[in-house]
Length: 398
Image: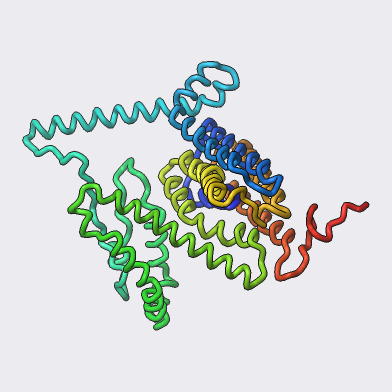
């Protein structure tokens, strides 16, 4: 949660390529549900066990969030009509909704006018639902490429008024055509060796992906994307389970507590897709979507991931009691709550703008959180440097 709130938002601010202005209402809405989820988690974990009705309340919390989202515009308009402070909170959101509605109407009008003009000129009407694209010449394996070939490998220039090139595409192109990488690829045999090792390690996964999601079926079945989506989710679950098992084993071997491995290793490893998606939409100018992706992910993790898992455990085994709920769990939960408030304060201080300065500040706060986690937990069998209440060896001075 802290990695999402601090580092992902920080990276989004840094790599957005522009200063984005976010609207107050959706951010405050998501913050409210996020803080509610943290408070419920803290209260339910106080007795060091989770009962069935507590996990049910977490699931109901997410259900209420989904219901709010279905009525989001109606709620915003109702708040706006009340005037006063509620009108101030929803002013920019209502203006954004009206602007988008106007742009959609203009786009539909232009599309209808174009189709009417094409029909009069005798040109065939484009296929409904068709997706067109222009392939870009890109030879990733070319060696000794000169300036002309590098220019042909550049991302295709987007038409006027369209979104910026994909962040991943731009980053990949920049790295592949950097002087140091080209020199490394030309003058050393290590590049070929690394490529062969990478291919050997990735072959089992790429083969499994191709067999479970064959591209040949894409043109034969109109709804094949639904199968690909389901299989992709299944593969993500399998790979995350493997990462969890390996991380737990490494933590046991090195005698590192699970909370440390979770807050440092697992949090960063499992949040890479969230990071990339937030950066990509931010580069397209969708700052609200980037922040909503981060906060919505945290809300889902607490309400659904924990709530559903604990509900299944209660059904099968009874009340959930584990070492994870004992000891100093209250400390990281309170830190998450405090950091969430820091993030909201940072948005207010920056006047709801995502700037590079804000991004570096948030990443620094996450580094501080990692330092606190390392200092307050036993690593390698040694006592923690900072002892907290309920920790063996802690004394209140009496």
